[in-house]
Length: 173
Image (cartoon, rainbow, N blue to C red; front, side, top):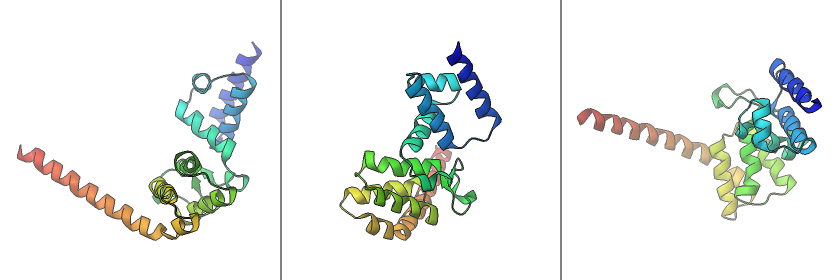
């Protein structure tokens, strides 16, 4: 069967080469469109998780061209290189339109630029989305990035303190 051979070749190429998320999305989209497959079927045939298929396809369909070369599978903020855009952050930005507010192309690019320049994480992007939902402009939400960093650091401290209290309570029991 030609389709089976085609998918086998794609799978082998994906395993041999270091293909970025955008290229995986292009392949998944092509399989969905050309072979009328579902995300679940593509996932099974390529041997990758459904969420990865959906994420990569979303990036392929919606990510502006100038950001595609910056995509990285690296989601660890501490090891992120300058100018890198982790796919989870990019996908979170693209989901702002779905979850919070319809963005213009210019607004989307502003947030993507800020994510690259300021090494934003997913939590910060989600907070920007919430600010947009409350009526903030993209520019005013982005201007609050330093405040968002402080808030994130405070949340981490509180989370650690809470975990320490839980440990002490377990020891006391």
